[in-house]
Length: 211
Image: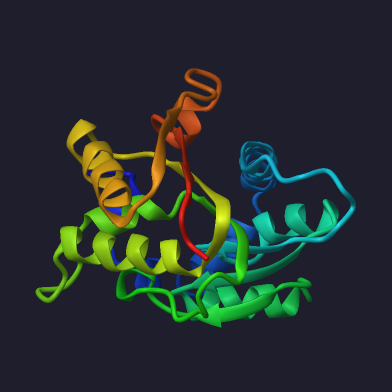
């Protein structure tokens, strides 16, 4: 049986109260999440001017990545489909604003308000049809289209993903490009975390024309 969680159940079911608490209490997960979040923030290439930015953490879970954003002086909004994960984030009193929502249905945020977006180990979930009404191509289209609209001009989005195969990676890339993004794959940690995080990739996209 596969140990990839996205093949076992939809995220809102897989990350129930027990699994969400186990995930958040794992010292190994906390360390990896912090390292990947720091790298994602580095790839956002935000101006070093001392001005806090409003960032979006997509698939924020219990707020582990958000803590990295807070530690670096930024404000953030976290979106996740698992109520159990968000409940733990509330218990942990993270400093971001938390939203319950399915990224595959699009992001209900005002145009141009987000200065940058990160996502750690979340976007590859959209490549699976968890319900009969789910079509991965359409869900990725809704996600990337709405993300593009809510980003400020010139903002970047960085996603750490572990696609199951090349076809999934290309589907994600094509969906982002069709939405208007420019960018591509950054190969990071090709061996160090392969055993723990499958074959992990960083995808960095730039939003060139949103206002």
